[in-house]
Amino acid sequence: MDSQTLPHPTPSPPPPNSNTTVTPTLLHLSFNQDSGCFSAATDQGFRIYNCDPFREIFRRDFGPAAAISLVQMLFRCNILAFVGAAPGPPAFSDHRFPANKVMIWDDHQSRCIGELSFRSEVKGVRLRRDRIVVVLLYKIFVYNFADLKVLHQIDTFVNPKGLCEVSNVSGTMVLVCPGLQKGQVRVEHYASKRTKFLMAHDSRISCFALTQDGRLVATASSKGTLVRVFNTLDGSLLQEVRRGADRAEIYSLAFSATAQWLAVSSDKGTVHVFGLKVDSGLLGHDRSHSATEPNPSNPSPALSLSLIKGVLPKYFNSERSVAQFRLQEGLQHIVAFGHQKNTVVILGMDGSFYRCQFDPATGGEMTQLEYYNFLKPEEIF
Image (tube, rainbow, N blue to C red; front, side):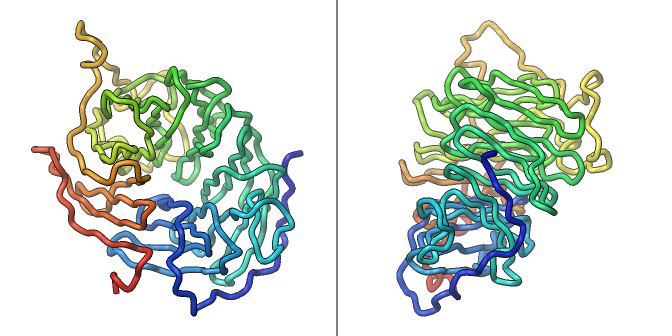
């Protein structure tokens, strides 16, 4: 058994040091499930921010010996999961959090209320209201949130980035992760107990995005030139978009709420927004049938789209972005769609926060609406 659950409360770390003035080093950034907030893991603890309007909600600085490698929020509630950046057990040696444990944190109580331990370093965590998903280098564990019992184990291709995404609609759960082969995507439909394998790319998978209802998945490979959008139910390729002709590392992919748009960030320093040919009325807002999955033998129009293959070379079959925003090349940025119409929020590992707007009719360069350095709150308040 590769994990051991400990549902009982564990000792809490020392209280935050309010006198610290050292600017922390960012180790990880992630948006919450609806992209309304984001979390920043640092070498001293973690911070939580609201996106619109932009403001810091709270921070927990545990001191210089308590680096946090990643934090995951559960929507806007008081429960979070985080993983330390310190090597191995014991769990609280010098008040360090080890890299092989997932700590379940209740911020109302300002303490850890549970933990999940593993024999190897945790690479990723995903949260739903009913499930905790933990990603290791070659394996994924799915836990019941209520009692931290293991429900499912999945073997994967080597997964150093901790790639995995889960749907966020209550009821049915869809999980996507690397398969057992290079370039393969595994889709788990838990409501119907079906597993689907997609041969998405020839190269290793480098990034995923999943719609909130789990119907669509976007994938990018280590080559980073093409992004493909698949129907998770039947595995069909719905659309292919081209980020560029040169090899790039894709840092993040994000669907808009209605799957009308797809945003892509890469090490080339450009965020691209692509238009998707999906009936947005059938995605994002229709929750009346969210507890059951559509019948794949009678798919909806949104899920039966296919690319029209002409006689042009493949390079011209893939579509170009509608809008772009230029950033510092080589610096890691992640992207999500804002709650304001036609906006994207971009977070940089240098502490940068951008809110930009694109014009869906004319396209081209996006307009920067806001910029902050969220590691220096004196510049904000």
